[in-house]
Image (cartoon, rainbow, N blue to C red; front, side, top):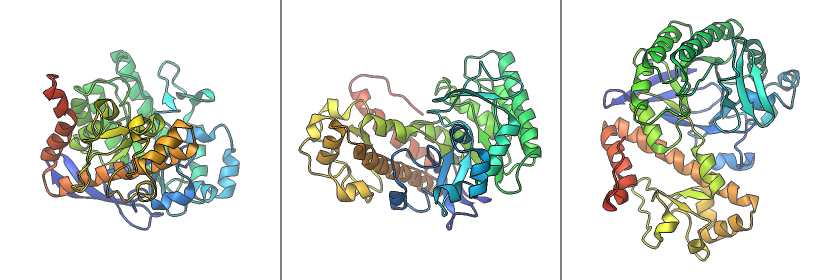
Length: 400
């Protein structure tokens, strides 16, 4: 793995390029990791994966915990790892346990021997040695050391313990690390600025290829998040990439970019698709005509539409005019509305393709803004477009 920063904006926001051995072209950052279940997106079949933008869509997140109940470690290793198992030879895999939907850290059950996770099969306690056996068998392009993530409300003592355990497991994972795959050191610390900074400084002293920032999206407020992010990123060397888990909404992604984060694992697309929503905010000056949408159809966020709504029953237009995704090139809002209301699984397939394509376009806009040194202006414009209608109604505007 190779990484280089190419441009800066607003002091800390940065654009770079990431080279992974299994991906033919460099991946521009900031970038999105596509969420998967056992290595494949939840709804997009493998034959439609190439329809997503290249190479932006070629970095996939996989949780080793998904494979603890199923194929054995020896079987995955015998097959040749994830690429051979799934037949995805031009993609890069980033492996870490948490996926923010099915594998959530359970701080109350974590102990000194391993990290605990809630998942559909129950609660699992994962020890560093077991975790590294799975990493060795999966052969991902990059992987994250085991971490003790805690929510925002835990005590100072528990925060300190989580950092101590994470550093201890970091050293154990590095000692057991396979010959291939870039190591990303895990950084935690909950809602404590001091512990976040201490963990970052400790991890920065280790021989790792990058950094994984954990413990976010666990009940901390957006108001305190920038200070926590800066406490982590400021001590880290600039030449190594930073990956974060737990930031979902576009506003939260912008907070991470502003702090100097390069890679994002987000389940925003999953939640949108599951609820029948489609992203519609403008990309590349595309104008989205929402004048024919009733307020209840647009909802509280004018950047997405609820395709279950009856107003779309006879709408013969694509989700977004001018969108080049497979869904918008071949299908209409009326058809997807029908699929959703008769509970056809094709609805989720088409929606996830569009939402993934559109969200990747959002990251492209971020990169362009950083390269043009206008990231701060971009943030104000983007967040403003989300809340201007609330201001008109007399509501308080939320700022990044």
